[in-house]
Image (cartoon, rainbow, N blue to C red; front, side):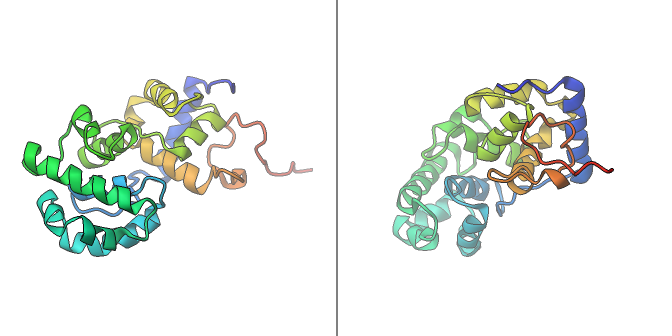
Length: 219
């Protein structure tokens, strides 16, 4: 396994990402905590762009759990049919909306355990909602963060949970609020899966990736 990045390098890693993008935002479009929750549930195995295309019209008429229940599963499927696994996701969204109305007064709970009991909501989704909607210092490890954590040496781990645990230990307190977004965006646009763009990477000199492409030496 790649050697873990040293604390001073981790500090500099996030300082640079922060300097380049001080207030990173989710690329999922939402109106309130509930619509964020729906968007994140729909985003499983789908792109943010694809989800936004579907939820744009949907969120013009639905912004609360009760409105979603009133819409119904069949009509919801019509809005999200372009998204993968839309049948299962429609069932989950309607059911979680019913639970929010019945048990939480139509509000999204600010509690991990409560969130994870909702249909279609796992640890990653709960972490996104807690971070984006409520400002909690959580890190949702998706494929991008898992790759960046392992490839760079920032937080090597064999599972998403292992990478998350390491990130929560090594990310400096000052950067923990936005670490989730910086790492996702870095993995999505720079440290890409097939061909990382090392030549424009702002942290390439801190990265432990043995196959990174560096500028040719000046003769």
